[in-house]
Image 1 (cartoon, one colour):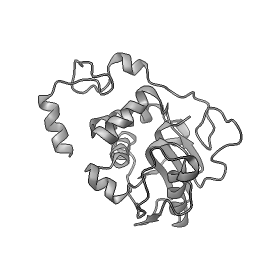
Image 2 (image 1 turned 60 degrees about the vertical axis):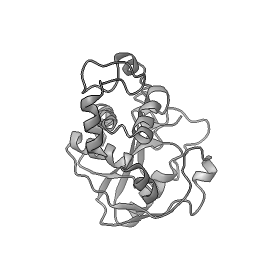
Image 3 (image 1 turned 180 degrees about the vertical axis):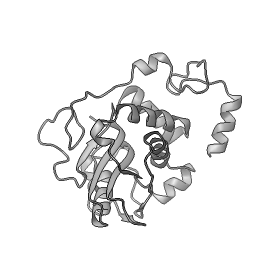
Length: 224
């Protein structure tokens, strides 16, 4: 899949992945207008769930991960970038998303740690031909100069989470995450979008059960 994407880039004029406007260099993936439209989250957000505000209590109060953070709201240009990666196989977008994360990552999250991508369902990985979270984690690990350890495995065959309600996402037995190798002492759990946090929570619980001391959930975008 990666080879095909690179070959296409050689023969197709570069264009913005969101609005399709022509770009002057193939290295760019967003035009200036779409870049200005990125929905950045404020610097001050809840450490537990990554949201700027709460209507009631923190939705991650009982989550297994100690902290959650994302640079962008899952809206507008950020949503289109995630869709381009996940549903159009625009693999170079993962590098751009990793750059956005790395450039805005809080200083206290830059301490030595190991990146762990959220695992995909096997059928979905086979159907797509790649794993979006793994691509994002790979580029982010390179930018942060941190090791990457894909030590989680997903063995459930639940329905896709897109369009599912919060209750459906958190239904018991919906997610089955297990370790396939020793977890790191301190893990940065990497995924593209933080919605209800159900998948991140399940992954964090598997890591902690295996001996991981602390898990922080890092995503590209946060659903508000």
